[in-house]
Length: 94
Image 1 (cartoon, rainbow, N blue to C red):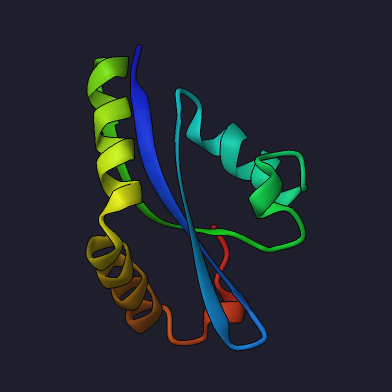
Image 2 (cartoon, rainbow, N blue to C red; image 1 turned 180 degrees about the vertical axis):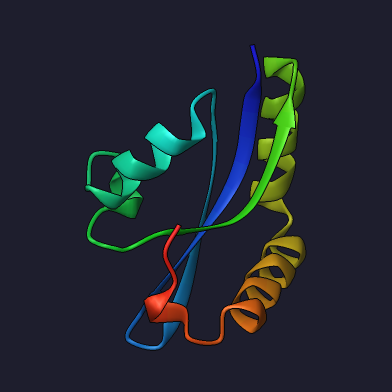
């Protein structure tokens, strides 16, 4: 079974937020986040996939998720790259 580590980006009132998670069904998980049925932190925001990486091992995916959650510089770099690629951020959809 494949596991995905992902980073979502959202914008609200000119401020950008990110969320890091792990799942074995990426499309379903993003839908849950965007319908306010995902993690509590993600409720009330429209999320966009900025980064994903797949793993064949859940333990490796969990290690990457932990690492990405702790590495604020890498998260900021991914957010910046995503924002530059999608200049009209609010109109971007998955």
